[in-house]
Image (cartoon, rainbow, N blue to C red):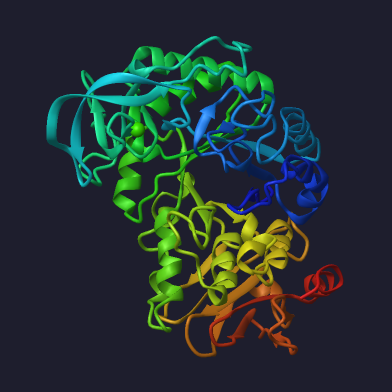
Length: 491
Ligand code: CA
């Protein structure tokens, strides 16, 4: 069994030059060699902002950069042809491809309709502010540039539950269409969080659900992806994705791994959702992201021993996709909560070197974010290498201090020289006694993160006293591994 790693292969501020799919293709082999087995690609269909769209303002899910719509043929990331080539190239290099599925909202309609509506309060979507009036809603999606190719389905008000703009009065608000109800099977923020933005898809409308299933089958046949990243699942009626995934998996005839974005720091809500969808998907470990943020911003006063206590990976590891940051948490974005630079190597060590969870590396951490003058996370490539080749065997935790914590992987027979001792602290420097096991008796261990020149020599029982510098992580590995890392990777 090899440790697998997922990578989110985009950040918000990629250049708007239509070259991203070409970049995916060009980097495919290098990614695999770096220890990346799976990539999550950004939404590939035309958004309302055309070639400037990151992809979440969904306009036409059948337009993968093929039709002259919203001011351009290509998307921000390139053309349909380049996209399909990139997916094939990645898969050929041994990298699985996960596509971003955005089915909560649509934007950029081609026309308006007069719709009877009621207005709800922004912070209480069950509270009716006024009733019995008509708005002009942007609900007619006709796709004139596509002319019915692949599908002649056009969207109209009956497919949606509501919107946030009245073109008649030019006024914003939460408008629910007459005869529609917000789904009760959604997050309870704002009492009911079915509505997020744009025009909200009504999953209780059979025609809407059928259109999304028809499209899903077309998308699978067209792209041949390996699985999905599901956007905004807390805003979508909980029964929708369980059924949709079942049908997509039947159609594809394969497992189709799926990970949902349920953005909440509350473990209870994530567990509730997983139960509601019968474990048909994994979820991003949002509580762990916020534990990292708290640890990184508490001036050394965070209880590091409890860092996994309220996380998904600590409570339902088989459903946890762990991550440090993403395109929403990066500076300037909607959920901005970027982990401070000093803590990033610690966070990545905690998701990459342990046995539980599927870790997801952020593009902006791997390559940096030039838009904000942010460089790559130091040591990240080393940690990926360590995970791939040597983070095996039993895991023994030393999460027994409020600052200086650690764990060891004892190594296994299958992976030569595997095994490591990881020690980190959110406070001042210190040393931790940890046991690697008797087969390492007398061995010299070196810090693969490069903070120490001198080795730690293990005693006759395979015990060592492993140091970490203040506010940092050291990963102590056997000498042959250290030599290999020094030769391959620049510190
Ligand atoms: Ca919704």
